[in-house]
Length: 239
Image 1: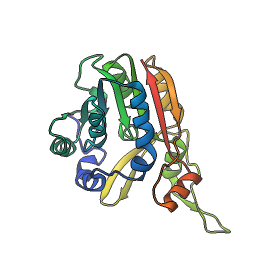
Image 2: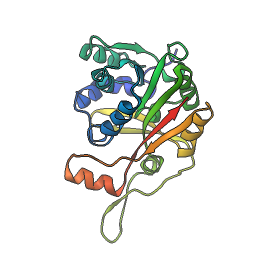
Image 3: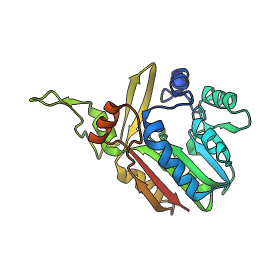
Image 4: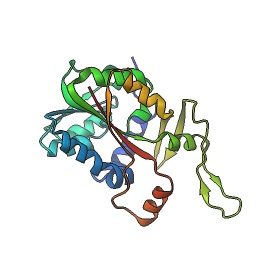
């Protein structure tokens, strides 16, 4: 029996739910939502699975498009919140490495900023491919590996200007790190980009789309900081 709090998400669920609400954070509301939804609109899936759905925000957005959407997450409090906010939705407790669904059950499988939380990346990629119907797509939003590498060693500061810098750490070394902010304490993975690519390539999937989207809005300071060090990417894989 796995501990749903093994990476801190069960303990951090109340703070996360309060933080996300329906609006989301900067990364979601101002960088990822628009291009992720644009890809979904282009694909026009009838069924979708959101792996690591959390409080169900993206499931609700997919449902608003008329897509029969299922959410799965290992944290009971997240699923309870998702069901409360979306009584007509389908939500299940489960880990990405052992999805409780039949083979080829979904036209679209979404991983929206969840790969960094998953210990068994290869198993999770295999499960996403297994539950995906032939011709279906896996749509992934993730932190870039350059940004997670810099996070592993923390910021440095320019000796001359005092500017906050984000140098690379041990880029080629996979490692887990604990982060604390706004009442959350969670564990994330740094992995090289090649590790993510190989996990999906090994399942026979074909990369059909890749993007590093620009912000579409948000506070000026956040937009300017993001332009100096973009940290989000989107991948789309076809079965």
